[in-house]
Amino acid sequence: QVQLAESGGGLVQAGVSLRLSCVATTRTFSRYTMGWFRQAPGKEREFVAAITWSGSITDYGDSVKGRFTISRDNAKNTVYLQMNSLKPEDTAVYYCAATLRGAAVTTQEFYADWGQGTQVTVSS
View 1 (tube, rainbow, N blue to C red):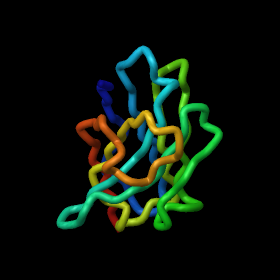
View 2 (cartoon, rainbow, N blue to C red):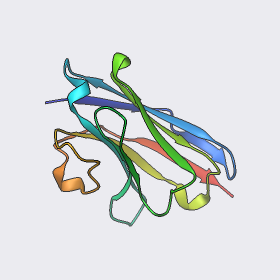
View 3 (cartoon, one colour):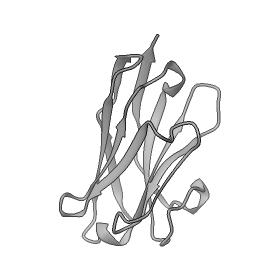
């Protein structure tokens, strides 16, 4: 089991950038594919981004492609989500998640471990 802790959320204006971090407590972080998901009020949780263990393969949800970038530092047990050109519709609780599946998994059911989430609010 992996313990995950997100940070970096906050209240920002539309158009600015924000970087989320997720630190994993595990000795085998480099084995995991990591993902970011988000859930807005009244909506289902949706896929945002995923990155394989080596960082060589990434995938993004359609609504964030070209604006968000996922990356990882295996030496620091950390995965990042760089969010640029933020929009009010990006407002949500952002969660990181871990899976031992080798692909850049976009389906939340395949992720076994989840963080508590960090709130991102984008004002217009």
